[in-house]
Image (cartoon, rainbow, N blue to C red; front, side, top):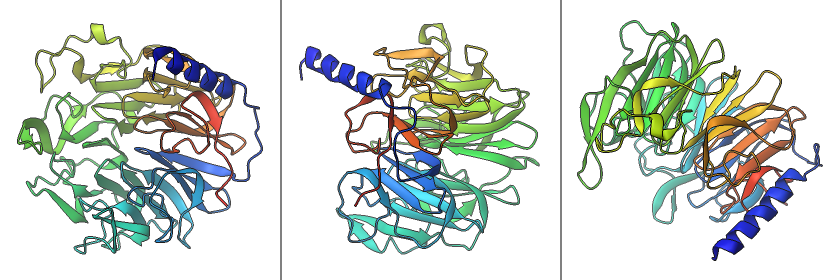
Length: 418
């Protein structure tokens, strides 16, 4: 495609995004949304679960009769349970019911569904999968669940973290060299840490303790786990990668309350609303200009766009909620305004501009007020005060929940599929 065509399409997408009515007609009232790799899921106020976007590995959970193709509008998840939380991962999705029981569906090549030794009840293009919500083994009860690319972790009511799935980069935190596990395995608590918040990145995981410290484990090739990681893991091509197979201290003294992981970075929110990030900063996702980050990257010393030490995000905004995406992040102000920073080549900041990136949080255009934000690998979705949902970014697989092109500003999630 020629550059002038690309810009023309982008301009159309911006115009479309910025001309939407403030309260579009919608038949689904959303309480929350979760953006994943190339799909999104949401919980309705009526107790139903919907997913849309890529369904190559049944990550939409529509059941065996649902076609393994992209769905551009919300499809009902095949389950009789009313979920209280949902987390969309790379190629799978997990959720919690009111009792804290975990369910997962989608791809299971690494055991990320947590359903035990049986690979999965179905096959999706030769990959083990489950097209309906399947209970996680172990009869454990959780209060938080988070899905990474090929692994899943959950926080129990007693403050313990359990993980399952891919462990090639140590992202399960079990101090094991096993490639993975299909059953929930307890992560060792460092010292007397009592975990209160949890977030999974692509190949790493982080948690916040009750005293506001951040602990991380998994891949550390960009410093996303922090300076204390000392282990070595191996990629599929036998390349040695810095990692930590157990939780290590990543940040202390910042009074952190929540945390999230991206492709190669981590961000956390402090009790005073300040945001801190560490890891890779190639697109300004740490909240500082890439050229100002002079620390060496653990994997590539010649690259100086990394910081294993927490950096405060520019702008001095006090957020009440934070979400971390692949190479971007978004924060929510108390008044419901949304701000995003980091990469924007595919519209993930939602500020109705054609900039490449922004190291400074920029307001999401459209004038909406939100109650929840969720950043995926390359797109972002949000539940508005009026309980309608909006998404922005690429829509190649229908992850925006509408028939639009790539959107550089919020577009409303459409009605459910017929």
